Image 1 (cartoon, one colour):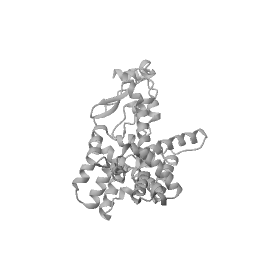
Image 2 (tube, rainbow, N blue to C red; image 1 turned 60 degrees about the horizontal axis):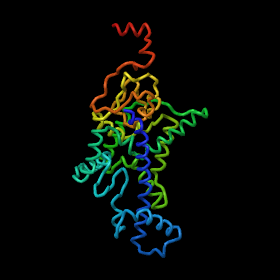
Image 3 (cartoon, rainbow, N blue to C red; image 1 turned 180 degrees about the horizontal axis):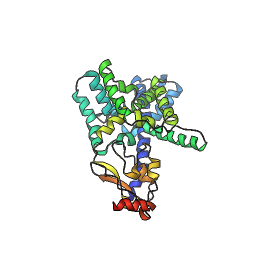
Image 4 (cartoon, rainbow, N blue to C red; image 1 turned 90 degrees about the vertical axis):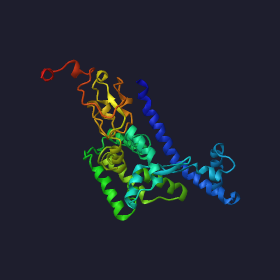
Amino acid sequence: MKFQRHLNKLRWLVLTMVFAMLILLPYIYVYQTFLESHAYDLLADSEKQLYDIMEALTQPFVGSDPENELDAIKGTTWSGNFFGFMISDPLAGLGQFAAGLSLHPPLLMAILIPVLLTLLFGRFYCGWICPAIFLYELNTNIRMMLKRMGLRVGSKGINLNLKYYVLAFGVLLSGFFGTVFFASIYPPAIIGRELFYAIALGGFGSGLVFFILTLLFDLLVARRGFCRYLCPGGALYSLLGRYRVLRIQRIVAECNDCAKCNAVCELGLDPLNDGFGQECNNCTACIAICPTDALEFKFQIKDVAAQGPGHLGKKYLYPSAEDQAAQVE
């Protein structure tokens, strides 16, 4: 379906909106503190300017009680309130369970929607919502620019299972110390927290240093290295979405073996040979770049087995003697 090749544009719009919201929410918090003080005349000129801007932005969405009505959306992509619904990252729920060694019904309800969506759509959070992905993909552009300049960038291959060990180790540490260890190393949690620190409190935390290190890791060690090899959230979403209902599939009859899908895949997967697996985050980059529309979403719980060369490619149209002999066998 040709419309699917435009889904990557929609994905970028969603990522941009999520990141913009994470920037806006701390400003709303500051605006609410101004409202609660009832002391506009005592504000500094810069604070009055911020007050006026936020009043103009929020006025169409609030009534007579903006101080409380603006609480409709609070928090970050780690955990927050969305028009009365508490929604939390499943990793936050897992970490809290490990730290407290108990199940809290409100927390279970908060992670229910993300878990169900992951069971349906797989690791979609990583491709469509995670605010770190917004920055990591921009970081990929820097990586490409450095390569064009002749500078060396990291392309080391690391065991994909490493992130599952990070997930397990994080659960053990959370249980041992009684604290949610993942909040310290999980980029979506770090970004929301650091943006709040910077905008509402005028400073930064140690999480900013850690996140910058992940960007450098991507540039100097491995392409999208943190997401592929170290992210505990990516590990959890991959496990939950292993048997997802919606997945990308190659239409072998339309494939010309150009391999552009493999080149554009940020997670280093192998769409050309039907190698998607549980790591795929349904980002649609491969669908967008395919010149023959040979990749599309299908409703099925398992990937198809390797289908061989594309029927529009040279290897299929003009097979070598060895390929012909293999087909006969």
